Image (cartoon, rainbow, N blue to C red; front, side):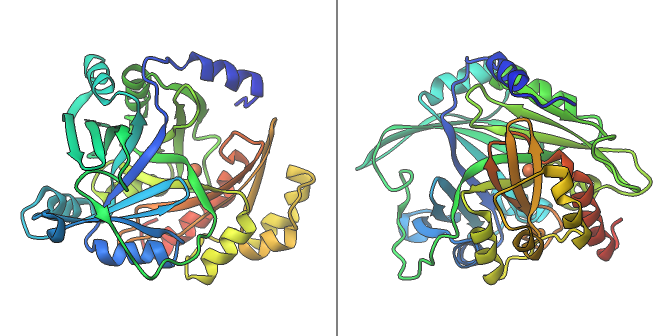
Length: 377
Ligand code: FE2
């Protein structure tokens, strides 16, 4: 397992540039109560009201609330009646991520190129217009029922997308300092990781930048394997996990069982000040996985000098790891909906471009402790 600057640079440059992606445009969650979910992401996670679509704007079947924090936009969508595709998705999977929207310059080109390279169709290029201009969107399936929607918005000046109106709200709590989506991880079925690695390589021109096997990511009881896919400019990173055989059920197995299929396991969001962000999140009721306090006794030997006060990190449960380029700080929330499926990671990078391999063991032991409480280990 090598994580050197030179190698990463070489691999990034190998990512094909036939599919230029500017960044993550938005993430859409299908949830059973969008109004309440939006309030949760505002009050607990520090998002603000941005846009709304529902009965008042002529949307008869679904209602969506859009919240924003710096570059992160979340769309929370619920059905307004029975028998909708959104409702069926929620019935099967519970609340979860349906759409990872990718910001492109040309959504028609992106769709046609992806389809030519073997993608599965979700949405043909569609022009949506209002008084603020036009947006073109198109979409393809990825693992499970998750889709990538390409968003071309260079001729649009509106608040979010045509069909949405500004969501005016008196209540907009202060940001907790979340800046952008650093990476988004998918859990896929046993034996399917390499299939999806190939999909990202061939259809979207991504390169595999890292790989972890069950020797890297295993505890006494369970194991998983992971490969990290990145686009050419490194702005979009999608690690993909698959379960590996172990003595007991792994966290990926538990996810697949309760999500009833493949899907998004966690969304990592970046901050410039993890101590401030996590303190604020904790004060607002967000619960985090806790590693054993002894983790911090060995921290200095493992990662060397860092700017942060280790006592503060110990109190909050923030983890640290180092690679050739620097270090990173990270922490994981408990799952954020009824089913033990999706959670968030808060990450602060101080040079490091890796994913916290040195923390995997402590982290997975913490995850398994939660699994055990649920009777799912
Ligand atoms: Fe992560």
